[in-house]
Length: 156
Ligand SMILES: [Ca+2]
Ligand SMILES: [Ca+2]
Image (cartoon, rainbow, N blue to C red; front, side, top):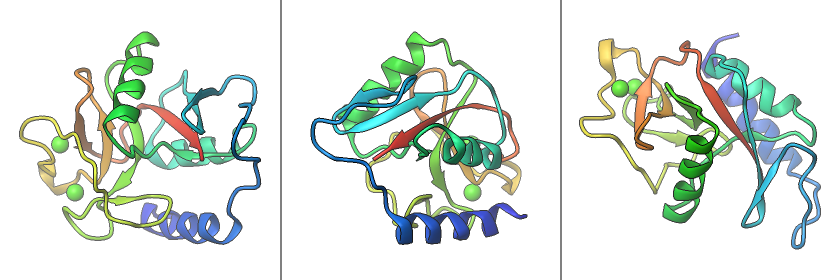
């Protein structure tokens, strides 16, 4: 299955089913971390974007790739990523695979409002970079979706 097809399936699945968890004073499943009202799961393995999407969906409780809503969430995620030594790239839930340089959230295909691009990014290097990763300094880079990265799952 192509990434584009997977992307559309994901959008449809997530918008139609919603999540059934109780909101408010929530408790995250074992292994997940609570921040604000969302639960986050930090991977211990490196996989390509397609597998990262699947692994988040298959995780206990089921989630999506993390989507950064704003500066505070970003800073918290950055700290967690550093603490865990997740170097060399960490996938998040954003892509411009449908239209070049239009980065959308994977969960609902809405345009990303908050961004934190590294200097000179996104550069769509070799015209092949359509997925978004955190790099070592906590900033964002577009990279090839086939690259093997750590990833962060989120349950809203
Ligand atoms: Ca691109
Ligand atoms: Ca890039």
